[in-house]
Amino acid sequence: MSKPKFAMYWAASCGGCEIAVLNIHEKILDVDANFDVVFWPVAMDAKYKDVEAMEDGSITLCLFNGGMRNDENEHIAKLMRKKSKILVAFGSCACEGCIPGLGNFSTVDQLIDTAFTTLTTDNPQNLRPQTSYAAPEGELHIPTLNPMLKTLDQVVDVDYYMPGCPPESHQITAVVELVIAALQGKAELPPKGATIGAGLSTVCDECTRKRNVKLIKEFGRIQMIHADPELCLLEQGIPCNGLATRSGCDARCPSVGAQCIGCYGPAEGVVDYGARLIAAFASVIDSDKPEEIDRILDGLVDPAGQFYRFNLAGSLLRGGKSAHQSNDS
Amino acid sequence: MTDTPETKSFDKAQDRPFEPVIIGFTCNWCSYRAADMAGTARMKYAPNVRLTRLMCSGRLDPTFVFKAFAGGADAVLVSGCHPGDCHYVNQNYKAMRRYHLMKRVLVQMGIEPGRLKLLWASASEGAIFAREINEFVEQVRALGPLNWNANGSQIADHVLLSVVNGQPSEAEVKA
Image (tube, rainbow over the protein chains, first blue to last red):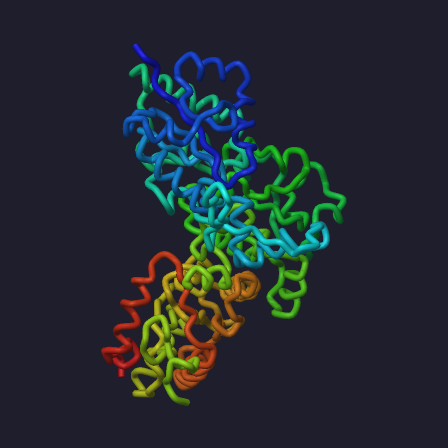
């Protein structure tokens, strides 16, 4: 009997998700024992035409990471959807846009200008990438950037979401074991649309720091504050996103003294991650005077970046006005 | 001001003169009563604001505001009891802090600060409520349409149509 087929693809992402999968150590042998890896560009040679030639629905499990930054990403997303039984939005980029999604604060022209003209770039001829070029051998094409980065589920139907930047290895192991058990008829898969490999609560719930009453007179950046190692970071004025972030990482950052930046995405039931954090942060400010509130808020140097670092493309507004306007034209 | 495609008072995306759509949130105890008062006293004010009653301005989840903008609203009004008058002791201060923080985030998103307004109105301030809404509508009209191209533009169409078709707004129904 042939083994069920496994695929993994990266769209607009950094490759950290692939590392996280390899980081499950000897469990990767279980993946190999139970699955036939048919397509995984980062780990093995494969051509798009090989995937196109496969029967629809013939891939049992596809872990898809990365956002939809260009038309190639979207093309492969649609292809993998067609060929896969279970399509998992794997990692923060596919689920909610992640760091590449921050590009949605700018237009494509601004992004390209930054990449090709700023101080760190040596570009004396002031070149810009062209999406097509007539070479003597024929017309050459490179992918065209989308006006805005989209999440995977803004382009295709997604079966499961697995958050994290990247997903924690023990969570990947648990998911792999579950899928294998389900294939053997020993377990049931969660309902479609569920978030897998993560908790239902918040990072605060897993955090072991001591909590008292949060009354904040001043926000500060973590490097400017000599933080108490046992006390809740937010209580000390360090903007920690744990309150709205999904659990599942065992509160790794706060437990070593760094604030939660929200890579596990919105907690269960949260519609707009940033909006939830705005509600939470505003609630703990200890002032009723508009001028003083403004002074305290000045301590949050980049509120939109603080609240939407991972979630901008997946948020209600999806990006800034300039990117939306270029999306119209 | 003329309503031609070249002016801000023309909604190019909808191809018709621009009528601002404003989603308003009022608290049960003061500002909704102020709107009620304006209605009972037959004060006329611009029909562009659709009011949603919350028990308290402190109930205002910033998600509501973002959803309104994403759904096509041109502006959002948040109103509650005057500072010190909150039915729930101090929750309107919470609304005030959220308003200040939301405004900073919206500006970073490219949404003009003039599209979000905080208004304190007591139950007896119907006239003030009506006047402030008229001023706010003109302020938003001057800013022009927001036309947020995000999920759910059907919400905008639905509310816009009621303006264009001249259907009575909540304010007029009361009057």
